[in-house]
Image 1 (cartoon, rainbow, N blue to C red):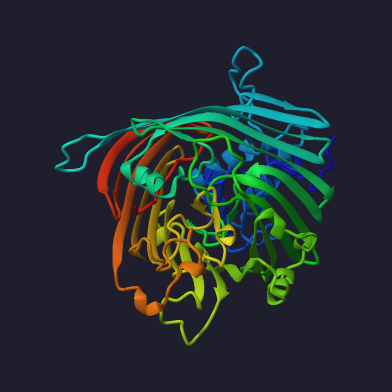
Image 2 (tube, one colour; image 1 turned 180 degrees about the horizontal axis):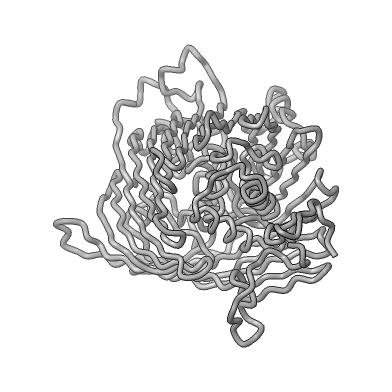
Length: 561
């Protein structure tokens, strides 16, 4: 039987016990992340087991935290939570149930009252669920069906949009030391016009790798992601290797690396010792290419990310990081594998062929129900040029705030975020060292040379009803093709002429608005409807849509093309 870390009284048998071992990750953008931030802020204490703001989080990390909040509420009465919060906590524990165990020896997955054909849906969360002493496996379908209609006033052509994703996922662990995850699916999608404009300009389908664009504006993409994890030294050192997406930060956007780009091959190391958390990420990425359509091998490049983080007290987490792009394979050396922060900064000072940026990020709880967060990254700083867009001074900065139970209204959560990226920020001397992957920005999807303001509201009038609204305003430098004015991160410093040749006062504005209401019919199965308005450089319009999602998060194409 699995080792227990806590023994609860029998009267609290419904509260679950955390276990040791290695795990799969909570899917990015899933409902559990909002709950995680919400409970941290309401409790007024950061989770000491998670630092560095590097996502995705392990399912064990999430399950332990949700169990801690539940136990503290029931046993000690530390927190006042609404019935909706308690439902969401039980839901999250059930979804990550393999990492909890109650006093009877059962895991945290909630048993179904009516299993299907005896073997299917024996738990509320999983189609197939098996949990033995040395082996766990869960299998689930993944489905995203959505249809939309152009409702732009005065439009002569009514564009129909749709999403048709069908697939499945499997996760599990072996002997409490090895975890694994695989997602396979086929996605046929006809998105709104802003996505088509993006593809025409960059020859890529946002968030996807290989795809086909059909004559009627439909995209067809096979989705395959997976990884395995190994608990090398329990509690101190773990490893993950596979093909998936990463997200660095706490915000809606990331200015370092975002899951809005394509998945890639990665090796992730995490070390916890003496109150410090050290994260190391190594990636094989795809350099810019002319476009798909032949069987040639796509060009490769490599990247690394090193971060050291620590919680200072119970309310503040600070992380220092270093991000490096190495370019083509012949630029990659064994020294690039050294898992020590700032080694690459030293190598760059010695004129190594690479692009290295330094940065920091933080998360702070100034008061109950409030969370501040931010990140900043700089490639080069010349304070004499800081007020003028130039390749000699490049940086990116983010600042955000979350306010939970806003204005004392239970389960009303607000968020505001500002992102600013200077021109030329993600460019380098060589195209292979630009901050891109699969013809897409590796961080913010709009590249560089812009300021963006985002507001988000979320309200749960009922445990199963989710009402969301998000709006953004964007101001960016108008592309000056064929010149390089710093907005197109697929160009190089060498293509920059000089400040006086480019009119930096030519800006364009964009906006994105979305309202959505969803009803969770059963665990992770959502019926939803909403509307989206988008305004960009080349197009604007509005759509109304409806559909269903099953074990997959909702998509946002916040693009201003």
